[in-house]
Length: 531
Ligand code: PGA
Image (tube, rainbow, N blue to C red; front, side, top):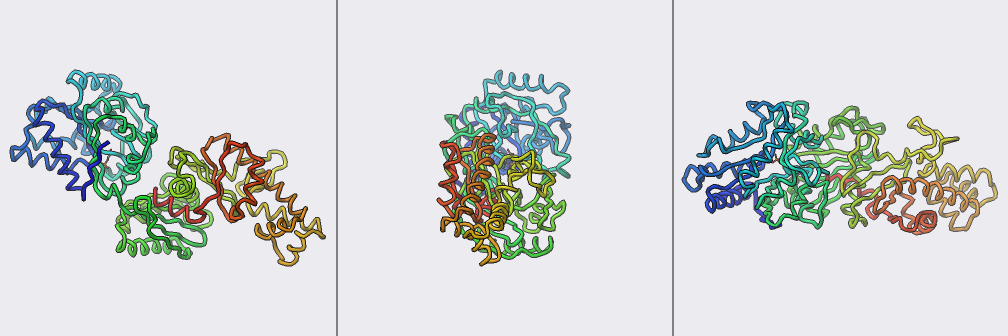
Protein backbone atom coordinates (compact mmCIF):
# COMPACT_ATOMS: atom_id res chain seq x y z
CA UNK A 1 0.00 0.00 0.00
CA UNK A 2 1.39 3.37 -1.01
CA UNK A 3 0.73 6.20 1.44
CA UNK A 4 0.41 9.87 0.55
CA UNK A 5 0.47 11.99 3.67
CA UNK A 6 -1.21 15.38 3.31
CA UNK A 7 -1.13 18.40 5.55
CA UNK A 8 -4.91 18.68 5.80
CA UNK A 9 -8.29 17.69 4.35
CA UNK A 10 -8.09 20.16 1.44
CA UNK A 11 -4.75 18.82 0.31
CA UNK A 12 -6.06 15.25 0.60
CA UNK A 13 -9.09 16.17 -1.53
CA UNK A 14 -6.94 17.93 -4.11
CA UNK A 15 -4.53 14.98 -4.44
CA UNK A 16 -7.40 12.48 -4.75
CA UNK A 17 -9.21 14.61 -7.35
CA UNK A 18 -5.98 14.85 -9.34
CA UNK A 19 -5.55 11.07 -9.46
CA UNK A 20 -9.24 10.56 -10.24
CA UNK A 21 -9.09 13.06 -13.12
CA UNK A 22 -5.87 11.46 -14.42
CA UNK A 23 -7.67 8.10 -14.63
CA UNK A 24 -10.43 9.64 -16.76
CA UNK A 25 -7.91 11.43 -18.95
CA UNK A 26 -6.03 8.19 -19.57
CA UNK A 27 -9.22 6.24 -20.19
CA UNK A 28 -12.28 8.42 -20.92
CA UNK A 29 -14.54 5.34 -20.74
CA UNK A 30 -13.34 4.45 -17.25
CA UNK A 31 -15.56 2.48 -14.87
CA UNK A 32 -15.34 4.31 -11.56
CA UNK A 33 -16.32 3.05 -8.14
CA UNK A 34 -17.67 5.88 -6.01
CA UNK A 35 -18.05 6.35 -2.27
CA UNK A 36 -20.26 8.50 -0.09
CA UNK A 37 -19.75 9.81 3.46
CA UNK A 38 -18.14 13.04 4.53
CA UNK A 39 -14.60 12.13 3.40
CA UNK A 40 -14.95 12.28 -0.41
CA UNK A 41 -17.06 15.49 -0.45
CA UNK A 42 -13.98 17.74 -0.87
CA UNK A 43 -12.69 15.56 -3.71
CA UNK A 44 -16.07 15.76 -5.47
CA UNK A 45 -16.09 19.57 -5.04
CA UNK A 46 -12.66 19.79 -6.66
CA UNK A 47 -13.76 17.49 -9.51
CA UNK A 48 -16.81 19.70 -10.12
CA UNK A 49 -14.49 22.72 -10.43
CA UNK A 50 -12.21 20.79 -12.79
CA UNK A 51 -15.21 19.73 -14.89
CA UNK A 52 -16.49 23.30 -15.06
CA UNK A 53 -13.07 24.59 -16.12
CA UNK A 54 -12.82 21.87 -18.78
CA UNK A 55 -9.95 19.91 -17.17
CA UNK A 56 -11.94 16.72 -16.86
CA UNK A 57 -14.75 15.31 -18.98
CA UNK A 58 -17.20 12.86 -17.40
CA UNK A 59 -19.27 12.17 -20.52
CA UNK A 60 -17.70 8.76 -21.20
CA UNK A 61 -17.50 7.33 -17.68
CA UNK A 62 -19.65 4.69 -16.02
CA UNK A 63 -19.97 4.74 -12.24
CA UNK A 64 -20.95 2.24 -9.57
CA UNK A 65 -21.48 3.36 -6.02
CA UNK A 66 -20.25 1.23 -3.19
CA UNK A 67 -23.41 1.04 -1.18
CA UNK A 68 -26.84 2.31 -0.20
CA UNK A 69 -28.88 2.09 2.98
CA UNK A 70 -31.69 -0.44 2.99
CA UNK A 71 -34.53 0.16 2.98
CA UNK A 72 -34.51 3.81 1.97
CA UNK A 73 -36.42 5.88 -0.57
CA UNK A 74 -34.29 7.41 -3.27
CA UNK A 75 -35.68 10.85 -2.51
CA UNK A 76 -34.85 10.57 1.19
CA UNK A 77 -32.36 13.34 2.06
CA UNK A 78 -29.98 10.79 3.55
CA UNK A 79 -30.06 8.24 0.73
CA UNK A 80 -26.79 7.85 -1.12
CA UNK A 81 -28.82 8.41 -4.28
CA UNK A 82 -29.56 11.95 -3.07
CA UNK A 83 -26.00 12.34 -1.81
CA UNK A 84 -24.49 11.57 -5.22
CA UNK A 85 -26.94 13.82 -7.01
CA UNK A 86 -26.25 16.73 -4.63
CA UNK A 87 -22.51 16.31 -4.27
CA UNK A 88 -21.50 15.34 -7.78
CA UNK A 89 -23.88 14.16 -10.49
CA UNK A 90 -26.05 17.27 -10.91
CA UNK A 91 -22.97 19.48 -11.24
CA UNK A 92 -20.99 17.59 -13.91
CA UNK A 93 -21.48 16.44 -17.50
CA UNK A 94 -22.10 12.82 -16.61
CA UNK A 95 -24.63 10.60 -18.42
CA UNK A 96 -26.96 9.68 -15.51
CA UNK A 97 -27.92 6.48 -17.35
CA UNK A 98 -24.36 5.29 -16.80
CA UNK A 99 -24.43 5.96 -13.05
CA UNK A 100 -25.40 3.11 -10.73
CA UNK A 101 -26.31 3.03 -7.06
CA UNK A 102 -27.79 -0.03 -5.33
CA UNK A 103 -31.55 0.40 -5.18
CA UNK A 104 -32.59 0.92 -1.56
CA UNK A 105 -36.26 0.75 -2.60
CA UNK A 106 -36.15 -2.75 -4.04
CA UNK A 107 -38.54 -5.38 -2.71
CA UNK A 108 -36.06 -8.08 -3.64
CA UNK A 109 -32.63 -7.12 -2.30
CA UNK A 110 -31.06 -10.50 -3.09
CA UNK A 111 -31.92 -10.12 -6.77
CA UNK A 112 -30.80 -6.48 -6.70
CA UNK A 113 -27.40 -7.56 -5.35
CA UNK A 114 -27.00 -10.24 -8.02
CA UNK A 115 -27.92 -7.82 -10.77
CA UNK A 116 -25.63 -5.12 -9.42
CA UNK A 117 -22.70 -7.51 -9.38
CA UNK A 118 -23.56 -8.64 -12.91
CA UNK A 119 -23.72 -5.07 -14.20
CA UNK A 120 -20.26 -4.31 -12.76
CA UNK A 121 -18.89 -7.37 -14.58
CA UNK A 122 -20.66 -6.49 -17.82
CA UNK A 123 -19.15 -3.01 -17.65
CA UNK A 124 -15.71 -4.66 -17.58
CA UNK A 125 -15.04 -4.27 -13.86
CA UNK A 126 -14.08 -1.18 -11.90
CA UNK A 127 -10.94 0.62 -13.08
CA UNK A 128 -10.60 2.91 -10.10
CA UNK A 129 -12.42 2.51 -6.81
CA UNK A 130 -12.67 5.37 -4.30
CA UNK A 131 -13.06 4.27 -0.69
CA UNK A 132 -13.58 5.99 2.63
CA UNK A 133 -12.94 4.09 5.79
CA UNK A 134 -15.17 3.71 8.83
CA UNK A 135 -13.90 4.33 12.34
CA UNK A 136 -14.33 0.59 12.86
CA UNK A 137 -12.33 -0.18 9.73
CA UNK A 138 -15.26 -0.96 7.48
CA UNK A 139 -15.05 -0.33 3.75
CA UNK A 140 -18.35 0.14 2.01
CA UNK A 141 -20.61 -1.42 4.60
CA UNK A 142 -18.39 -4.45 5.03
CA UNK A 143 -18.38 -4.42 8.79
CA UNK A 144 -15.77 -6.08 11.03
CA UNK A 145 -15.58 -9.82 10.55
CA UNK A 146 -17.41 -9.53 7.26
CA UNK A 147 -17.08 -12.57 5.09
CA UNK A 148 -13.90 -12.05 3.15
CA UNK A 149 -15.19 -13.50 -0.01
CA UNK A 150 -18.46 -11.68 -0.36
CA UNK A 151 -19.80 -9.98 -3.44
CA UNK A 152 -22.57 -7.35 -3.41
CA UNK A 153 -24.91 -8.30 -0.58
CA UNK A 154 -27.44 -7.12 1.97
CA UNK A 155 -25.83 -6.54 5.36
CA UNK A 156 -26.70 -5.35 8.85
CA UNK A 157 -24.96 -2.25 10.16
CA UNK A 158 -23.05 -2.52 13.42
CA UNK A 159 -23.98 -0.34 16.38
CA UNK A 160 -20.77 1.64 15.95
CA UNK A 161 -21.61 2.46 12.32
CA UNK A 162 -25.17 3.43 13.26
CA UNK A 163 -23.71 5.69 15.94
CA UNK A 164 -21.11 7.19 13.57
CA UNK A 165 -23.76 7.88 10.91
CA UNK A 166 -26.41 9.17 13.32
CA UNK A 167 -24.94 12.65 12.83
CA UNK A 168 -26.59 12.79 9.40
CA UNK A 169 -30.03 11.79 10.76
CA UNK A 170 -32.37 13.27 13.37
CA UNK A 171 -31.38 10.46 15.74
CA UNK A 172 -29.65 7.08 15.78
CA UNK A 173 -33.10 5.44 15.63
CA UNK A 174 -33.63 6.78 12.14
CA UNK A 175 -30.47 5.31 10.66
CA UNK A 176 -31.55 2.30 8.55
CA UNK A 177 -30.32 -0.91 10.11
CA UNK A 178 -29.28 -2.53 6.86
CA UNK A 179 -27.51 -1.68 3.65
CA UNK A 180 -26.73 -3.11 0.26
CA UNK A 181 -22.99 -3.03 -0.22
CA UNK A 182 -20.37 -4.19 -2.67
CA UNK A 183 -18.58 -7.05 -0.94
CA UNK A 184 -14.90 -7.26 -0.14
CA UNK A 185 -14.43 -9.50 -3.18
CA UNK A 186 -16.13 -6.90 -5.41
CA UNK A 187 -13.91 -4.15 -4.03
CA UNK A 188 -10.76 -6.25 -4.31
CA UNK A 189 -11.47 -6.91 -7.97
CA UNK A 190 -11.11 -3.19 -8.80
CA UNK A 191 -7.93 -2.58 -10.77
CA UNK A 192 -6.84 0.38 -8.66
CA UNK A 193 -8.06 1.64 -5.29
CA UNK A 194 -7.76 5.04 -3.63
CA UNK A 195 -8.48 4.93 0.07
CA UNK A 196 -9.17 8.26 1.75
CA UNK A 197 -8.88 8.96 5.47
CA UNK A 198 -9.23 12.27 7.21
CA UNK A 199 -9.44 13.37 10.83
CA UNK A 200 -8.31 12.05 14.18
CA UNK A 201 -11.28 9.73 14.50
CA UNK A 202 -9.65 7.60 11.79
CA UNK A 203 -6.16 7.61 13.29
CA UNK A 204 -6.58 4.32 15.14
CA UNK A 205 -7.75 2.52 12.07
CA UNK A 206 -5.09 4.16 9.88
CA UNK A 207 -2.48 3.02 12.41
CA UNK A 208 -3.81 -0.52 11.96
CA UNK A 209 -3.48 -0.16 8.19
CA UNK A 210 0.11 0.92 8.53
CA UNK A 211 0.98 -1.85 10.97
CA UNK A 212 1.79 -5.31 9.74
CA UNK A 213 -0.88 -7.87 9.28
CA UNK A 214 -4.38 -8.47 8.12
CA UNK A 215 -7.25 -8.56 10.50
CA UNK A 216 -10.80 -9.45 9.56
CA UNK A 217 -12.09 -7.32 12.42
CA UNK A 218 -10.66 -4.33 10.53
CA UNK A 219 -11.87 -5.11 6.99
CA UNK A 220 -9.79 -2.34 5.41
CA UNK A 221 -6.60 -4.24 6.33
CA UNK A 222 -7.52 -6.74 3.61
CA UNK A 223 -6.65 -4.04 1.10
CA UNK A 224 -3.02 -4.72 1.93
CA UNK A 225 -3.25 -7.78 -0.28
CA UNK A 226 -4.36 -5.69 -3.29
CA UNK A 227 -1.52 -4.84 -5.69
CA UNK A 228 -2.50 -1.23 -6.35
CA UNK A 229 -3.87 0.69 -3.38
CA UNK A 230 -3.01 4.26 -2.47
CA UNK A 231 -3.92 5.57 0.96
CA UNK A 232 -4.28 9.34 0.89
CA UNK A 233 -4.66 10.67 4.40
CA UNK A 234 -4.28 13.90 6.25
CA UNK A 235 -2.04 14.46 9.24
CA UNK A 236 -4.88 14.24 11.71
CA UNK A 237 -5.77 10.76 10.54
CA UNK A 238 -2.12 9.89 10.56
CA UNK A 239 -1.24 11.59 13.80
CA UNK A 240 -3.66 13.42 16.03
CA UNK A 241 -3.44 13.70 19.78
CA UNK A 242 -6.08 11.84 21.71
CA UNK A 243 -7.13 12.45 25.28
CA UNK A 244 -7.87 9.47 27.47
CA UNK A 245 -9.86 9.94 30.67
CA UNK A 246 -10.16 7.23 33.28
CA UNK A 247 -12.78 8.01 35.90
CA UNK A 248 -12.33 6.23 39.21
CA UNK A 249 -14.06 6.49 42.56
CA UNK A 250 -11.05 8.32 44.05
CA UNK A 251 -9.39 10.07 41.14
CA UNK A 252 -9.67 10.89 37.45
CA UNK A 253 -6.64 10.16 35.32
CA UNK A 254 -5.84 11.92 32.08
CA UNK A 255 -3.43 10.88 29.34
CA UNK A 256 -2.59 12.57 26.04
CA UNK A 257 -1.41 10.21 23.33
CA UNK A 258 0.03 11.17 19.95
CA UNK A 259 0.17 8.21 17.61
CA UNK A 260 1.21 5.69 20.19
CA UNK A 261 3.45 8.06 22.16
CA UNK A 262 2.32 9.13 25.59
CA UNK A 263 2.79 12.90 25.82
CA UNK A 264 1.18 13.82 29.13
CA UNK A 265 -0.28 12.23 32.24
CA UNK A 266 -2.20 13.81 35.10
CA UNK A 267 -4.41 12.82 37.98
CA UNK A 268 -7.02 14.85 39.89
CA UNK A 269 -9.43 14.02 42.72
CA UNK A 270 -12.85 12.80 41.63
CA UNK A 271 -15.47 15.36 42.62
CA UNK A 272 -18.77 14.27 44.14
CA UNK A 273 -21.49 15.13 41.65
CA UNK A 274 -21.99 14.19 38.01
CA UNK A 275 -21.93 17.86 36.96
CA UNK A 276 -18.67 18.46 38.78
CA UNK A 277 -17.11 15.39 37.17
CA UNK A 278 -18.13 16.56 33.69
CA UNK A 279 -16.91 20.10 34.49
CA UNK A 280 -13.53 18.70 35.54
CA UNK A 281 -13.16 16.74 32.31
CA UNK A 282 -14.21 19.72 30.18
CA UNK A 283 -11.88 22.12 32.01
CA UNK A 284 -8.89 19.79 31.72
CA UNK A 285 -9.66 19.19 28.02
CA UNK A 286 -9.81 22.93 27.30
CA UNK A 287 -6.48 23.42 29.06
CA UNK A 288 -4.82 20.54 27.20
CA UNK A 289 -6.24 21.65 23.84
CA UNK A 290 -4.05 24.76 24.07
CA UNK A 291 -0.94 22.62 24.27
CA UNK A 292 -1.78 19.56 22.15
CA UNK A 293 -3.69 19.03 18.93
CA UNK A 294 -6.36 17.00 20.69
CA UNK A 295 -8.75 15.56 18.14
CA UNK A 296 -10.75 13.02 20.12
CA UNK A 297 -11.58 12.01 23.66
CA UNK A 298 -12.02 8.52 25.05
CA UNK A 299 -13.53 7.98 28.47
CA UNK A 300 -13.25 4.90 30.64
CA UNK A 301 -15.91 4.79 33.29
CA UNK A 302 -16.92 2.25 35.92
CA UNK A 303 -20.38 0.79 35.62
CA UNK A 304 -22.57 -0.80 33.02
CA UNK A 305 -22.80 0.84 29.59
CA UNK A 306 -25.95 -0.02 27.77
CA UNK A 307 -27.90 1.75 25.04
CA UNK A 308 -25.32 4.55 24.94
CA UNK A 309 -25.61 5.47 28.63
CA UNK A 310 -23.71 4.54 31.76
CA UNK A 311 -25.00 3.60 35.18
CA UNK A 312 -22.42 3.13 37.92
CA UNK A 313 -22.70 2.03 41.52
CA UNK A 314 -19.70 3.84 43.02
CA UNK A 315 -20.28 7.06 41.08
CA UNK A 316 -23.48 9.13 40.77
CA UNK A 317 -23.98 8.14 37.10
CA UNK A 318 -27.49 6.99 36.23
CA UNK A 319 -28.47 6.47 32.58
CA UNK A 320 -25.92 9.14 31.71
CA UNK A 321 -24.90 9.78 28.09
CA UNK A 322 -21.50 10.87 29.37
CA UNK A 323 -19.79 10.79 25.97
CA UNK A 324 -22.50 12.95 24.38
CA UNK A 325 -22.35 15.50 27.22
CA UNK A 326 -18.55 15.78 26.98
CA UNK A 327 -18.64 15.89 23.16
CA UNK A 328 -21.16 18.75 23.21
CA UNK A 329 -19.13 20.82 25.63
CA UNK A 330 -15.71 20.22 24.09
CA UNK A 331 -16.65 20.00 20.40
CA UNK A 332 -14.57 16.85 20.16
CA UNK A 333 -15.71 13.38 19.10
CA UNK A 334 -15.96 11.39 22.32
CA UNK A 335 -16.31 7.67 22.93
CA UNK A 336 -16.73 5.82 26.18
CA UNK A 337 -16.36 2.27 27.39
CA UNK A 338 -16.14 0.41 30.63
CA UNK A 339 -12.95 1.27 32.55
CA UNK A 340 -11.76 -2.33 32.78
CA UNK A 341 -12.16 -2.73 29.02
CA UNK A 342 -10.12 0.45 28.50
CA UNK A 343 -7.38 -0.86 30.78
CA UNK A 344 -7.24 -4.08 28.76
CA UNK A 345 -6.97 -2.05 25.53
CA UNK A 346 -4.21 0.02 27.15
CA UNK A 347 -2.33 -3.17 27.99
CA UNK A 348 -2.39 -4.55 24.45
CA UNK A 349 -1.36 -1.23 22.87
CA UNK A 350 1.11 0.14 25.43
CA UNK A 351 1.93 -2.63 27.89
CA UNK A 352 4.14 -5.71 27.73
CA UNK A 353 1.74 -7.66 25.51
CA UNK A 354 1.97 -5.42 22.45
CA UNK A 355 2.96 -8.52 20.45
CA UNK A 356 -0.42 -10.14 21.24
CA UNK A 357 -3.74 -9.92 19.40
CA UNK A 358 -5.87 -11.47 22.13
CA UNK A 359 -5.43 -10.91 25.84
CA UNK A 360 -7.48 -10.98 28.99
CA UNK A 361 -6.67 -8.48 31.71
CA UNK A 362 -7.39 -9.63 35.26
CA UNK A 363 -7.29 -6.88 37.88
CA UNK A 364 -7.04 -8.11 41.44
CA UNK A 365 -8.34 -5.49 43.85
CA UNK A 366 -11.35 -5.03 46.11
CA UNK A 367 -13.07 -7.19 43.52
CA UNK A 368 -11.76 -8.95 40.43
CA UNK A 369 -12.24 -6.93 37.25
CA UNK A 370 -11.02 -7.37 33.77
CA UNK A 371 -11.41 -6.88 30.10
CA UNK A 372 -11.18 -9.10 27.07
CA UNK A 373 -9.30 -8.01 23.96
CA UNK A 374 -9.97 -9.87 20.73
CA UNK A 375 -7.99 -8.98 17.62
CA UNK A 376 -6.57 -5.96 19.45
CA UNK A 377 -10.04 -4.56 20.09
CA UNK A 378 -12.32 -4.59 23.08
CA UNK A 379 -14.61 -7.59 22.83
CA UNK A 380 -17.96 -6.01 21.96
CA UNK A 381 -19.67 -6.04 25.29
CA UNK A 382 -23.31 -5.83 26.03
CA UNK A 383 -24.00 -5.30 29.68
CA UNK A 384 -21.87 -7.75 31.60
CA UNK A 385 -19.59 -9.35 29.00
CA UNK A 386 -16.07 -9.31 30.37
CA UNK A 387 -17.21 -9.38 34.02
CA UNK A 388 -14.75 -12.13 34.76
CA UNK A 389 -14.89 -11.56 38.52
CA UNK A 390 -18.33 -13.12 38.46
CA UNK A 391 -17.38 -16.43 36.91
CA UNK A 392 -18.87 -18.92 39.38
CA UNK A 393 -16.23 -21.26 40.78
CA UNK A 394 -18.19 -22.79 43.66
CA UNK A 395 -21.77 -23.83 43.09
CA UNK A 396 -22.40 -25.82 46.22
CA UNK A 397 -21.48 -23.75 49.26
CA UNK A 398 -20.34 -20.68 47.38
CA UNK A 399 -19.58 -17.45 49.20
CA UNK A 400 -22.25 -14.79 48.75
CA UNK A 401 -21.47 -12.07 46.25
CA UNK A 402 -22.86 -8.52 46.11
CA UNK A 403 -24.15 -9.33 42.61
CA UNK A 404 -26.72 -11.69 44.15
CA UNK A 405 -25.02 -14.92 43.08
CA UNK A 406 -23.03 -17.31 45.18
CA UNK A 407 -19.52 -18.58 44.52
CA UNK A 408 -18.28 -15.76 42.26
CA UNK A 409 -14.55 -15.87 41.60
CA UNK A 410 -13.95 -12.45 43.12
CA UNK A 411 -15.13 -13.75 46.48
CA UNK A 412 -12.02 -15.97 46.46
CA UNK A 413 -9.42 -14.30 44.26
CA UNK A 414 -9.75 -10.60 45.11
CA UNK A 415 -7.36 -8.98 47.55
CA UNK A 416 -10.29 -8.44 49.92
CA UNK A 417 -10.97 -12.18 49.88
CA UNK A 418 -7.27 -12.98 50.39
CA UNK A 419 -7.14 -10.63 53.39
CA UNK A 420 -10.41 -11.97 54.80
CA UNK A 421 -9.09 -15.55 54.61
CA UNK A 422 -5.82 -14.46 56.22
CA UNK A 423 -7.63 -12.73 59.10
CA UNK A 424 -9.64 -15.90 59.62
CA UNK A 425 -6.47 -18.03 59.72
CA UNK A 426 -4.70 -15.54 62.03
CA UNK A 427 -7.59 -15.68 64.49
CA UNK A 428 -7.55 -19.49 64.41
CA UNK A 429 -3.76 -19.59 65.00
CA UNK A 430 -2.98 -17.12 67.77
CA UNK A 431 0.71 -18.11 67.97
CA UNK A 432 1.41 -17.67 64.28
CA UNK A 433 3.62 -14.91 62.85
CA UNK A 434 0.62 -13.92 60.78
CA UNK A 435 -1.42 -13.31 63.89
CA UNK A 436 1.43 -11.41 65.54
CA UNK A 437 1.50 -9.05 62.57
CA UNK A 438 -2.27 -8.79 62.67
CA UNK A 439 -2.18 -7.83 66.36
CA UNK A 440 0.70 -5.41 65.83
CA UNK A 441 -1.04 -3.58 62.97
CA UNK A 442 -4.68 -4.07 63.98
CA UNK A 443 -5.37 -5.16 60.40
CA UNK A 444 -3.97 -7.24 57.54
CA UNK A 445 -3.26 -6.34 53.93
CA UNK A 446 -1.68 -8.02 50.93
CA UNK A 447 1.65 -6.47 51.85
CA UNK A 448 1.41 -7.58 55.50
CA UNK A 449 0.57 -11.16 54.49
CA UNK A 450 3.69 -11.13 52.32
CA UNK A 451 5.63 -9.92 55.36
CA UNK A 452 4.49 -13.10 57.16
CA UNK A 453 5.38 -15.16 54.10
CA UNK A 454 8.87 -13.64 54.09
CA UNK A 455 9.22 -14.89 57.65
CA UNK A 456 8.19 -18.36 56.45
CA UNK A 457 5.02 -18.39 58.56
CA UNK A 458 3.34 -21.76 57.80
CA UNK A 459 -0.13 -20.36 58.47
CA UNK A 460 0.43 -17.54 55.96
CA UNK A 461 1.88 -20.08 53.52
CA UNK A 462 -1.25 -22.17 53.73
CA UNK A 463 -3.52 -19.17 53.16
CA UNK A 464 -1.36 -18.08 50.24
CA UNK A 465 -1.34 -21.52 48.68
CA UNK A 466 -5.14 -21.67 48.92
CA UNK A 467 -5.34 -18.18 47.41
CA UNK A 468 -3.15 -19.29 44.50
CA UNK A 469 -5.45 -22.29 43.96
CA UNK A 470 -8.43 -19.94 43.74
CA UNK A 471 -6.59 -17.62 41.40
CA UNK A 472 -5.47 -20.51 39.20
CA UNK A 473 -8.92 -22.06 38.90
CA UNK A 474 -10.38 -18.82 37.48
CA UNK A 475 -7.40 -18.16 35.23
CA UNK A 476 -7.68 -21.68 33.80
CA UNK A 477 -11.38 -21.14 33.05
CA UNK A 478 -10.61 -17.85 31.30
CA UNK A 479 -7.87 -19.53 29.29
CA UNK A 480 -10.26 -22.30 28.26
CA UNK A 481 -13.03 -19.87 27.31
CA UNK A 482 -11.00 -17.31 25.37
CA UNK A 483 -7.71 -18.99 24.43
CA UNK A 484 -5.86 -15.69 24.78
CA UNK A 485 -2.24 -15.15 23.72
CA UNK A 486 -1.59 -13.92 27.25
CA UNK A 487 -3.32 -13.20 30.52
CA UNK A 488 -2.19 -9.95 32.12
CA UNK A 489 -2.50 -9.59 35.87
CA UNK A 490 -2.79 -6.17 37.48
CA UNK A 491 -3.57 -4.71 40.90
CA UNK A 492 -1.56 -3.97 44.04
CA UNK A 493 -0.69 -7.57 44.83
CA UNK A 494 0.96 -8.12 41.45
CA UNK A 495 3.65 -5.65 42.53
CA UNK A 496 4.99 -8.60 44.57
CA UNK A 497 6.20 -9.83 41.17
CA UNK A 498 7.87 -13.24 41.15
CA UNK A 499 6.81 -13.98 44.73
CA UNK A 500 3.27 -14.20 43.39
CA UNK A 501 3.83 -15.23 39.81
CA UNK A 502 6.36 -18.06 40.21
CA UNK A 503 4.20 -20.24 42.53
CA UNK A 504 1.09 -19.29 40.53
CA UNK A 505 2.67 -20.52 37.29
CA UNK A 506 3.24 -23.93 38.92
CA UNK A 507 -0.53 -24.30 39.19
CA UNK A 508 -1.20 -23.34 35.57
CA UNK A 509 -0.66 -25.05 32.22
CA UNK A 510 2.95 -24.55 31.08
CA UNK A 511 2.05 -22.96 27.75
CA UNK A 512 -0.21 -20.33 29.26
CA UNK A 513 1.52 -16.96 29.12
CA UNK A 514 1.06 -14.91 32.28
CA UNK A 515 2.31 -11.34 32.46
CA UNK A 516 2.24 -8.74 35.19
CA UNK A 517 0.97 -5.37 34.04
CA UNK A 518 3.72 -2.83 33.54
CA UNK A 519 1.17 -0.03 33.26
CA UNK A 520 -0.95 -0.83 36.31
CA UNK A 521 -3.28 2.10 37.07
CA UNK A 522 -2.18 4.04 33.96
CA UNK A 523 -3.61 1.39 31.64
CA UNK A 524 -7.17 2.78 31.87
CA UNK A 525 -6.44 6.33 30.70
CA UNK A 526 -4.05 5.13 27.99
CA UNK A 527 -6.56 2.61 26.69
CA UNK A 528 -9.37 5.19 26.85
CA UNK A 529 -7.29 7.48 24.62
CA UNK A 530 -7.28 4.71 22.01
CA UNK A 531 -11.07 4.25 21.97
P1 PGA B 1 -17.05 9.17 6.56
O1 PGA B 1 -17.46 7.65 6.44
O2 PGA B 1 -16.36 9.53 5.29
O3 PGA B 1 -18.33 9.91 6.75
O4 PGA B 1 -16.14 9.29 7.74
C1 PGA B 1 -16.58 6.77 5.87
C2 PGA B 1 -17.15 5.35 5.97
O5 PGA B 1 -17.89 5.07 6.92
O6 PGA B 1 -16.81 4.55 5.11
